[in-house]
Image 1: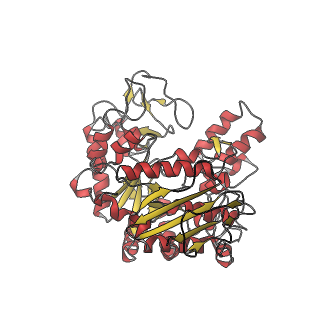
Image 2 (image 1 turned 60 degrees about the vertical axis):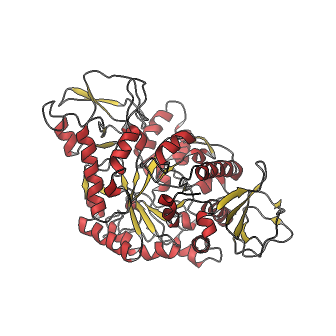
Image 3 (image 1 turned 90 degrees about the vertical axis):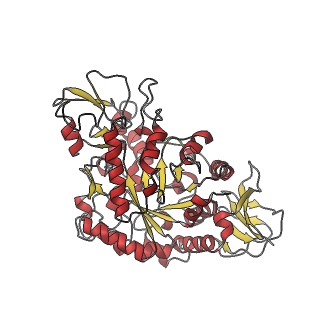
Length: 531
């Protein structure tokens, strides 16, 4: 049973926005805060009651906002602080919440803190970053290459876990902790309702053990940031590399005073052998991982994060489902299997219309700093054509193309030149086309989220898995008191599914008909009240 501290969060449905690619209102080809405001009714009508914005702080955009140059100002391309104030007000007027993306592990090297720090060892910012006369180890950057960069001004090496322009903050310095507390307090005072915290596990290093993350003071630092009384009411979700239940409890246990929940990424490996290499897979492997973590979270009274897609990942629909002939069935089946579990649903922009992975013929069509680094490395092993296929499969650009509002050349996203090429299937997959279709994925999401919101069993009920591990389908129940629901999701083959209990006619099915004789078509799903 969820602890009281987390129970209200299960009523949240969070819609994730990549601001640069959502909606442009001034014709510069870059999405902006006014564009988000113009689409709040669309988001609310879907059934979401909270918005998570990827980074919108001032930034030179070497890594699309994850290189912050000022945590207390707005990125020029996105608008002004007045625009942010209006966005907060418009959300709250609709009873919706705002979650901001916080990047506490590193700043841009153009940040004032770094520019002062590099001047020498005798200024207030000197120890805001990690500086060494010699490289202390052979750590590698996540974006390829050495993680240590020599700075000519200071005459020392600094650590960058990611891009050269993203210098890691030294959280061992109490002044850094205080500075990040001030950032959190600034935004909470403005009315922000929570934070998604980027690579949270990296803020504590263990140089002795050679670990760039999960250092000995990690949980102390998290409590320093979010365990304070004045921010105890906000929602927090961390991005980390947690893979075992003990470490998850240390992050999110009800008595830990740290995070509300954590993104778990085991299931993101489904459909690929590594980030840039596809692998034959099915929804069977996906459901086993999801249900295992559901049970572990339930057992410890913790909150589960429910997501398939985000700004860093190619669409799960394309890796696990059939994103062509059965795109509607796959998208709605995946949504049903996930979002009727206990936890907080996260929906990434475009997911609600069945957005797929994209495909391009030239490396010049890509922008993602991570995939461009990998592309150069792939060229040492593969032909240019093979390297390009890897990038097409794994690039973060897959999730960052402008939102497809209609099938026009610029997708209804901008009147100017889009900052990134429109999605390669934008003429086919867009909001206008989906809403005009008899098989609207958006309308199915609406019905699914209404069902979830109106029945407490989906919010706080017990979960029991009925189907076996090797079945071609999944059946689980959600039970609270006398209320019991069965969720049935078939996978890629036609299956005969026999339920061990009697059910009412489906309250929701993606094929618009009650199943006959227990035979379910590929990716067919149904949600039924158990008699």
